[in-house]
View 1: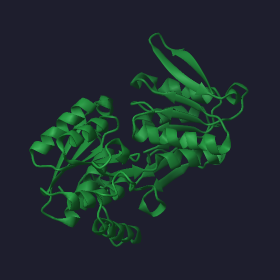
View 2 (view 1 turned 135 degrees about the vertical axis):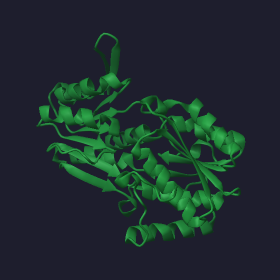
View 3 (view 1 turned 90 degrees about the vertical axis):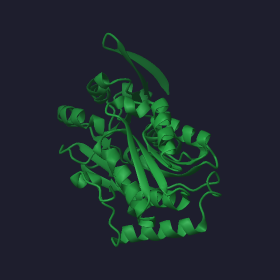
View 4 (view 1 turned 180 degrees about the vertical axis):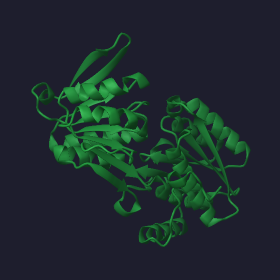
Length: 334
């Protein structure tokens, strides 16, 4: 691949990686990475890994752009479509309103957006995840591993999507022990909340002072500070989106994996044949889950695995229903 830098306005520049096929008018796919960068070790990096897997398995090429600020959202989508990328994968709910405006102007371009399920455009596929289900499982693990009876959650931007993580986590913890205390803090109310590891560490230390001995981070790049503070202070952490167990071996209890990589890989693989509508990824189709590997094997007991797998089966069967915060803006666990 070659790197081409285009000036986007007077002060902004975007790095665009594109295969030669785009210049020839050939429809290679495109990926628009949200704020925080493709190496955030979380949501964005999972998507990037899916794109790279597609390249490795097919020998194909794709266009890639990383957003640097809010102002670039619309111009980036338009430039990607005008360069001929098709389909174009857009990451993050913050791009929804922009895509709703842009998509009708490019009816021959197929778009896919991750973490959105409320748009109504004939050329947009929406990919949503049942984060509350995966969070329920790691909440169970947190409560079973806790020695203090208090666990905690650090979210990124204070939006309903992140409350869905928090609510599922609390439900799982309280399913193990109704007396479990769950402390919840959000990092902020603007997009900078996704990339503030210092604030994440501060919130974690505050939660530890309140008795938390297991903390779950759903905060993008901010979560790196959460996991670091937890390791430094001698408590367990839980990663998110990507498998983050390796970041602090023996100190990360597990990670609530959200298979954004599969979503990107499948979209690239289907190409312009992708259909509009909503695809929901949960426990039943391995869209979410928990990570086990050599880095956390000694932390997770057979009893924990048995309990979590039983709960997983019950959720898939419909015998256990995990309340979705975004359905009504409430959480029965709080």
